[in-house]
Amino acid sequence: MQTCKICGGDSLVNVPEFEKELTVCTDCGEVVSMRFVNPSMLKKYINPDYQK
Image 1 (cartoon, one colour):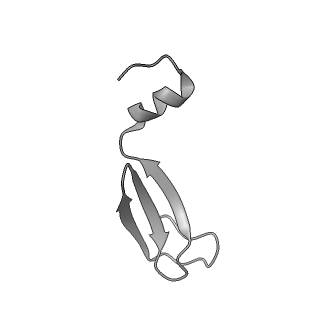
Image 2: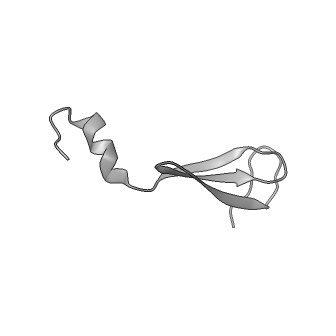
């Protein structure tokens, strides 16, 4: 089980935000993790010639 590194809390929720999904501690509000829902969109930053 994942816990908050700031307060040690284990009450975490997933919050969708545009192309990302954030995991947030409900005790202190710290963003514990961030995940891109569609990681293929990151390819344009690795390779400027990348075409969708």
